[in-house]
Image 1 (cartoon, helix red, strand yellow):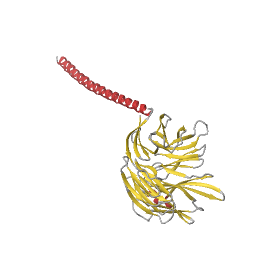
Image 2 (cartoon, rainbow, N blue to C red):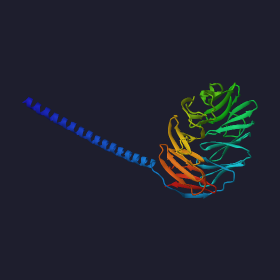
Image 3 (cartoon, one colour):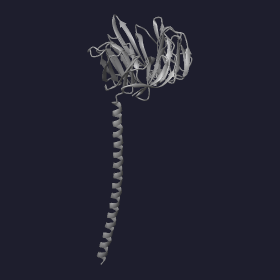
Image 4 (cartoon, rainbow, N blue to C red):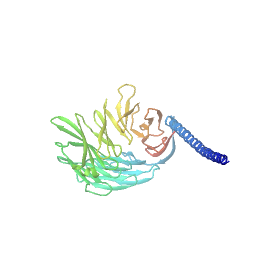
Length: 403
């Protein structure tokens, strides 16, 4: 009798355990069903978004229209530049800045014979070749005035207002670095270059944060020509090095007239036979070198791309622009015919224009737009929207929309 009772008790326990297991399995199955539904929904949303992104990237615009305009007055002889979305005007007599609606932001008067300008993001510096003053402004107003006390040969500004200058001092070339956010005569870094040691500095560039400086030197010894690209670090790493020098590279039988930072750790240099890319947040090293097959007509860059323009030798077009990414890979070559005033890289777009014509491609070569402006245009500024631009004419600032 006892065995029978024990049997039914054990059977009841097994049934209850089975019910518990079934219940847990049902909960687990329900959770998995919800998970799979959510995952499927996310995948569908991602697929739809990807579809529209691809459609947008491949979208071709057929016309442009002015959707807004503001009257302005540009004095004769003034040069127009983009200052982080604002419109910068400068001439021998002064510089001024206005926003995209034509409202005056600031005005600075001076007297110069040959103005030299450097722009980095929302910061700018301007000085006169052979002059002794550098005026530093951002898109909102004046930051400071640097007095060099020596004739100015070249200058560069960083996004945070550091100013590098190349100064003439008889047989010695001085390289002085200043804090342009104040009125000052005292450099925070000073160095010198001589032809018999380092060579003559022909190009200078600062990283946007002002921590790194690149200088291209030209050196001639017994008729043999050599160029050097040197990097200086103004941070803790550079303090431990002589003259803040942290790395450098020599190039025989070539001239390197152009060196430029793309961001805080990427720079490139262009010579008469190659383009070289450097990378490093403390001590930049050479990461890529590409030989060139022609004479470079102009150089254009953004934080993501570098474009070198050549006369096209194939006979298919007048010009060719070779596009490199920041790792030094040539990702695209684009043929074009218009006599360009400027070439702009904005996101993945290549914008080529002059005063009456504009052509837009993406970096994969998709033809996005070909058209003409309603009015002669001296400056085109991309906006956050890929189909809208700010167009500056002789008497207006227009909002241009591609359709």
